[in-house]
Amino acid sequence: MIDPWSSAILEYNEMMEKFGIKPFTKIIEEIKDPHWLMRRGIIFGHRDYDRILEAINKKKDFAVVTGMMPSGRMHIGHKMIVDQLIWYDEHGAEIYIPIADMESYSARDIDFQESREFAIKEYITSYLALGLDLTKDNIHVYLQSENLLVEDLAYIFAKKVNFNELRAIYGFTGSTNMAHVYVPLIQASDILHPQLEEFGGPRPTLVPVGPDQDPHIRLTRDIAARFQRRYGFILPSSTYHRFMRGLTGGKMSSSRPSSAIFLTDSPDEIESKVMNAKTGGRETLEEQRELGGVPEDCIVYEILLYHMMGSDKGIEEIYEACRMGALMCGECKSNAADYMRRFFEDFSRKREKAGKIAGSILDRVKP
Ligand code: SF4
Image (tube, rainbow, N blue to C red; front, side):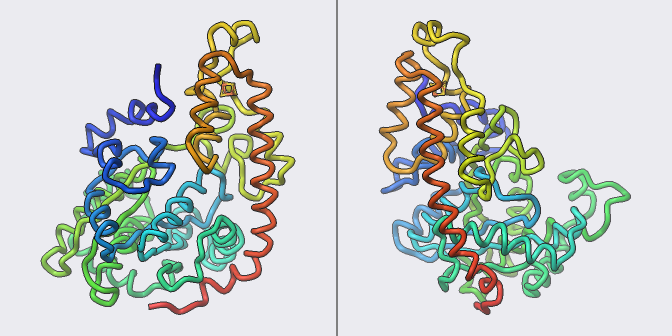
């Protein structure tokens, strides 16, 4: 029988082999209190995580960098990043959260003021409500367009990166606007600037990403190597988490509202979305009792796997009962919908409170 946490590794095996990403299953044994996203195989791969682990275990300085894109509503798949940041905050990280307003401007035609307002209302408010205390001194949230140091560093990086290289990675063509071409350099600068002397000098830096972001990571590591003599950069480490699938199967996406649970959906909408999500159930109850369900194909199971906090035991029990045909989809969906309703009722109260301070987060001047 496949175990409840194994499918990610199988799904991403090819990509890991091709690009030299190591499985997280080995290194997890050395983490004293792994996050549930690590324990459940949702974080499935890494590059150079041993540096981060050493920093955590020896209580040394390390940084975590992860951006937010101020376009498209925040959905439940995005919550995974916040859950990880909370864990790294508890483990002593200095956290940097760039808001990619330059990318929004150049690639999606969203002006800077609109990006700022959207980031506050949609993302910063939800990050706070999910429990990441953005008012702490070790957490730095900034707009790319307002961070001159990041922009200057990107310009310095541009000297050693050529257009053909970026074209091969990102598919740029002769008609791609130059602001867009510049964005990967800004992203590399977002990741590497915490290692400048002004910020305490070179230190292990982690970027938690989805597998589609690996080209950025590879480019940034190359750039770090090219500027190692000048800045002493330590190549950034990365972890890779699998994506939550959409409610009807396929990809969960902000541009397809029926595929996603948005963090600002009402509890009623969320309950209805869970009740209508695709399951791995059989055609008839008899078949389900006889053959069992297929949790690996079930979005309801996936919602619980990704978001049911607390012990893993509850998840394992659902998995076993489903596979053994002891649990029927109607009952299972109704339990999941109830769990999600309670979570989101509480979350919407927290969002209301967070909304009162969200606007001030970007106005705070931090080193
Ligand atoms: Fe999914 Fe639950 Fe049905 Fe199993 S019983 S297929 S986990 S909804």
